[in-house]
Amino acid sequence: MKFIESKQNPLFKQWLKLNTRKARKQSKTFIVDGLRIVEHALESGLIETIVMSESYHQKVAFTFDVQVYVVPDQHFKLLIETENPQGILGIVKEPELPLKSGKILYLDGIQDPGNMGTLIRTADAAGFSGVVLRSGCTDPFNQKALRSSMGSILSIPLILNDDLSYLRNCNTKIYAAALENGVNYRHINYPDESVLIIGNEGNGISDEVLELADQRIYIPMIGAVESLNASIAGGILMFEMQKSCT
Amino acid sequence: MKFIESKQNPLFKQWLKLNTRKARKQSKTFIVDGLRIVEHALESGLIETIVMSESYHQKVAFTFDVQVYVVPDQHFKLLIETENPQGILGIVKEPELPLKSGKILYLDGIQDPGNMGTLIRTADAAGFSGVVLRSGCTDPFNQKALRSSMGSILSIPLILNDDLSYLRNCNTKIYAAALENGVNYRHINYPDESVLIIGNEGNGISDEVLELADQRIYIPMIGAVESLNASIAGGILMFEMQKSCT
Image (tube, rainbow over all chains, first blue to last red; front, side, top):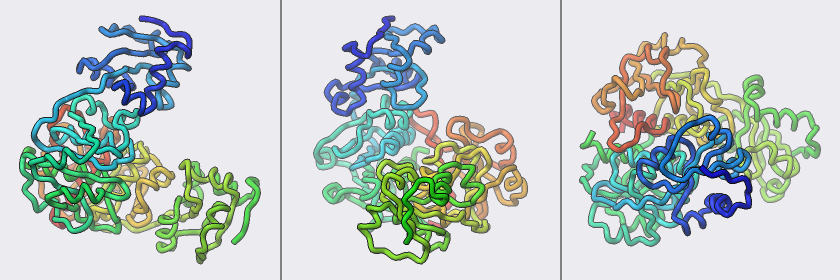
């Protein structure tokens, strides 16, 4: 255990920078917040460093196989975006899990970090093989998205795909969730290998992505509502696609 | 149109108080944010007053059948919890829509305002007849919940029920979403009149509510995930319960 007193400490400054997407991308590391996800990251072998607040360190008697730093409570708070952080965080390497064949969730322009994390968590729960993120999506490694993902980000393969190469090279059936010109999502037998595309919260799927889809699907709505929240639509569709398994 | 210059104006002070649950409860009014939901509230006849920021008022040429007040931009911001408000809000009466028979969503201890709003929006989209909220739930009329509900709060009957009387007097089949001792949610034919109970994000449904359920149901999960987000689980179950209609 090492104690870091000053905010000017180079390591501390480096951690603080991880609150920006740019620094996360360059270093391929990010911060996970709270004991539960820290333990999860330890199991995955992805953790580089653990940081604790002073008062948290005084309360607990854990030992870890990685370097632990302790910082004053008021400095710790700068590293975490929640108001009342637990007092333990991990600096974690981006997992690089290979995408296996199976059902894939493809996200096009998801902007809300809560939706991002929830969609990743739900894809994991539905037994999807991975999630592909087109550029334009919010960063899955920001703290809000990570909290909503409840650790799934460490266990399900996640591919950041800048162009449309993934969809273009995809030999499996591609389904796009769209409000218009689609088939009722319940009237389809989804093959074991298929892709589900979910689009932006306000504008849906962009035209160039929609063009690559084999089939548009929609969820019929009864009330006066115009649309479903993106992660709700994703959840309903993913669990329908896995029907044969459940 | 009337211009209110001072934050000390009694009307302005009254609006400001509507950011507390207590004042909303006492006055049975709440604030809706943005033109779209203001128009929706106008159609429902529920709106009492419209308030605009000065710069919004200069840009637009709408006329409304209710009293419009204009306040300086910096005062307007105090009334709205989002960082960049559009500049128009409505003071709206709590709708008192009667609960009809059909499928009902019963919420027990939902704490996250985003989940609250999303569950109400999804219940509306799935054609549920209403939502019953047990005390202990977060306020559905706070601004975050209202934003997530996308206006559904004005169209679907919402009953705040302090004790368990609703469930006790309920003659229809009651299903509780629970992780243990349940039946696969797909293996049930849900009758036209039935209740779905969704519980707290961390702790699930409380014991006294669970006791009143006729059947526990669960969503089988494949990945390493322990549970689904409460509003995702609610969405999947509500659309399954409405299968016969879609």
